Every structure is written in C-alpha cells, then in structure tokens.
Amino acid sequence: GAGVSQSPSNKVTEKGKDVELRCDPISGHTALYWYRQSLGQGLEFLIYFQGNSAPDKSGLPSDRFSAERTGGSVSTLTIQRTQQEDSAVYLCASSSLAVPGELFFGEGSRLTVL
Amino acid sequence: SQKIEQNSEALNIQEGKTATLTCNYTNYSPAYLQWYRQDPGRGPVFLLLIRENEKEKRKERLKVTFDTTLKQSLFHITASQPADSATYLCALPGGYSTLTFGKGTMLLVSP
Image 1 (cartoon, rainbow over the protein chains, first blue to last red):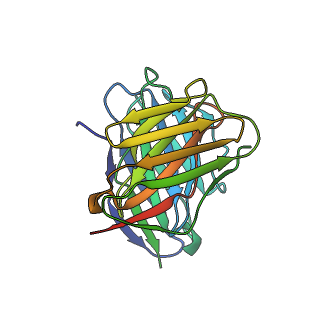
Image 2 (spheres, rainbow over the protein chains, first blue to last red):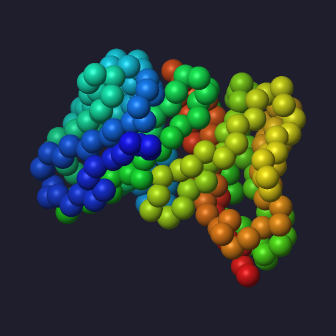
C-alpha cells in the first residue's frame, strides 16, 4: 500500500489477556519503529528495527512486551498478560535511510484494557 | 538523553494571524530537528526538517528557525486558517536513528 498500515485499529481486551498488534510498513522502508501514546502524553519510544534486527529495544516497558519483524517487512508487537496501564495508542512508523529520520506513521492501534 | 520542552498550554489565535510555537531542548545540539503535525485520532505527519547549519527553512506558509545557541526552534504558520488547528510536535534524533518527540503544543485557530 501507499502508507503504513496498522491493525487492528481498535482493540478492547480483558486484563491478563495477550494481544498482538500488526504493522505493515511502506514497501522498501528498512527502518521500522513502535511508539506508544497515552492520553494527553507525548510519543514514547518502544523499539526500533533495522531490517529484521532490533538494535534498540531500550523503550520496551517490561518483559511482557516483545516485538518481531520478519522478511524485513511486517512487524508484530505482542503484549502478554495485559494490564490496565497498557491502554494507549500504539503507533508504528517506517523510514527510508535515504531521508534521515523522517518517519511515516500509521494511524495507530488503540488498545483498551478493561 | 535529550529533554524536549514544548508549551503544554494550547495556543489560541484568530484566523489570518501568525502562529508561533516553541521547542526548547537541553543537552547536546542535534544534527537536525523535525516538526510534525498530529490531528486527533491520527498518526503524526512530517512537516519540515531543519539541519544544524540552517538558520531558517520555509515551506509554503510554514517557517522553522533553529538557534543552536539558544537550543531552540521556532515554528511559524503565517496567515493561519482553522484547518491548521492541530497538535504540533517537535522531534530530535535520539540513539540508533530513532526520534525523540516533545509532548506537542495544541494550536486552535478561530474563524
């Protein structure tokens, strides 16, 4: 597609359940990023992929959070045993190294943990 | 790590006026600085990038300045329109080609 695609757009889950969020970046973009945005807060960096490897996982808030990227394309962010404080919008972005740092964002996945 | 400060209070201006938003940062001066626009329920959209050796950058009604001495960037929208109402985010490079974002300033342009 023309832009970054994220699914699901909305997810409501019960505390303790696992969730998977998917990101399909712009074709050819080698860099992929996950950010989290809580209500009224700024963007919180979670993880960065270059190709299939993740040189920077420093933003993952706990070991309940994990992410993978396969084939240098689609990425999945998994949250295990969800907690209410995990409720937020999870934003994915991709970038081409040809343009330093400019990120192209998806519309986000809104996660609500009841 | 870099700390980015943007005015948390919304900026209210009248249509036709110039809006000026401020981004201040601490610590090291970055090689570049970016501005993004975010509408409610949407992902941020890139607007402008300005490099450390550029004092000013323009794009249509947008103008960005970058003062590495003051550690400040100013973002101007001239002849503002209600459609310019949004939250504007400042972003600086972090480690490993990542971007660190400010919390953003909401701009409200009244007709």
